[in-house]
Image (cartoon, rainbow, N blue to C red; front, top):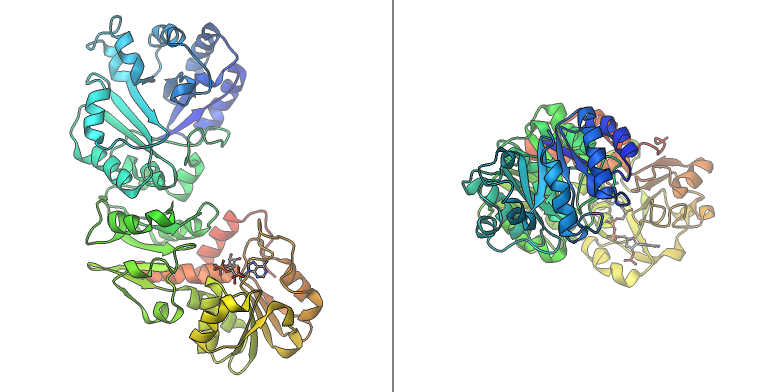
Length: 510
Ligand code: NAP
């Protein structure tokens, strides 16, 4: 089910990669076009040498640059290669559609080798409008399998790929591959719906097509071998989603609970938000073949999603933003677990009622924090670099606003940083306020969790101020989502362990 390409530049590199890739793959794709400096005869020799040493079934590929391969190859080169390669005992051969007619004189349709041939078509720009008609026109009926690797630009493209996979009878085994952010659904769920296999990144972790995941991620994080047509699908809607820890937390939770659920982060651009909700999520209109358990929502969709939901919970309405979608009967409900997530770890550590608390930043996370702090009885002041932009937040919760430069710890018990200053990849190492201004605070809470020990928290610790990092919030809001979707409580220790594994390299919180 999991096919890992080996794109090695030399025969020695390929031999070395075989056992490494075989540890996590069911099939190996020998991308012989990666041996771009060798003549065709030397590549064939490498194939002959490596086949007896392949620990898994192999598919042989020799792809020219115009089809997405690594080297320039004339048609004569390709035919010379395949006339010999097709006589080897490899389990499968990937042949591009343009070669088929040229091979028929020597390999007529009733030749047994066709049962081992995967005929492939690649389009790095678009998905055919009528996939069924396209496949009938371009793939020969005598091929054993056919692969359609296409760029998916819209949710409708993904729906049509799954409809082709599941809804159109044929003698072929099919391999639909959606390239790009939305294509992750075909990569993870394709085999559950009958795809012959799914491709991973190459043996060295390099993606050889857009959107590929590693074999280890597919096997261990998404538990691909256990997914089937009864798997309930949950996920994350955002743009980008690549660095989110949610997939690690939620999938670890499903494994712990023994639920047949999978959580798939999907990169959904603002243009695709409404169509994705319609085609992939909403129970009244969705066209994909699985049950949807719920979705998390992250930037930039937390507010933009509001018009597309049937109703909001009281918390989501109060915050004015949604981070959780619940599916209830025929309705989509917008909820917000950021409030409970932000407040639970804070209230477990510190008393808030009547205390003066400063909040840095006035973005999405600040909305949830201010909502929770006000409800807990804290006296909140919001410090923003552009107070004018924060006016809506101030008015919504009735809290005063001030310029960031006016912050002084002596006037407050606690400080919550909701700006990204200090986050990995975003002014990492910087402090959102001068460290000497922390003096007088009893506690500092930084919502950033990557890294856990931000400069702000280090400065606070050095001054004897109690600290709280952002990981407990991430865990608590995920636990809330899981409880609302599945009706089950998940021990936070399971989520912490998954987060620590995903964040390895960063030191744990104090
Ligand atoms: P957001 O909506 O983009 O808001 C960011 C806020 O920070 C805005 O008010 C922005 O001000 C301000 N800001 C940005 N750069 C700044 C700078 N250099 N100096 C001063 N202020 C600055 O982002 P968000 O969703 O609220 O997320 C903010 C942070 O919270 C991120 O680090 C995120 O990782 C973290 N977070 C953590 C959790 C968790 O579970 N632990 C959950 C949510 C968010 P302008 O309006 O002037 O740009």
